Length: 195
Image 1: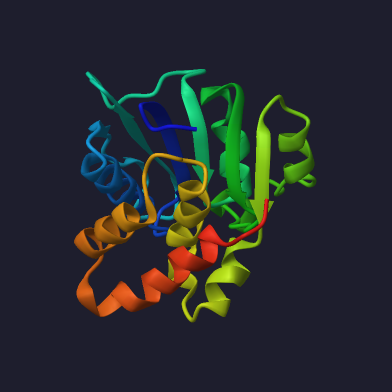
Image 2: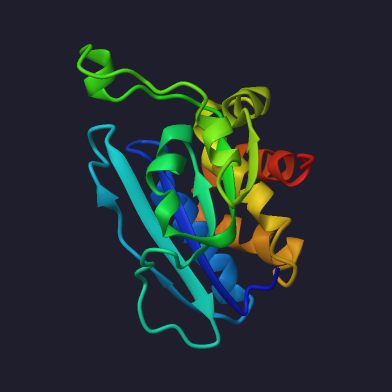
């Protein structure tokens, strides 16, 4: 798909790097010459709660908000969050999700149960679902903190008109120099995942 008009919903829980991912994707789109709007973090980002950010790109973008049924792609860092935000995905849209499970406080306290068969539920929707163990892929690259960049690497293969060079420049402009090499390896690993 091309980035001429693309709405990307990024979902996860606090501490997973949703804001960094949205800044990185937004920077790549800007470097590719697109008008870009990136929403601020919505949710309990400091407490491990549900967090969502939006990246909208196109020739002209007026609002960073993605409403119900408007997201072309959902980038999900945790599988239950993909189900929670699925109504925001367009019919026939794409979900890229980590198979990671992070139990919310209600499950930890025994007030709720983490649902079974989450990936199967996603696959029964009308979305195209790309899922893999992004945490394991991040560990293989040397840091569990790179799940977000690995998922961005997968996304990069779906956006035809943002070149690898632009993604590389955007990463250098977004990530602190001391973490750059680690994140470059993670991005390359994500971009090479088969789906």
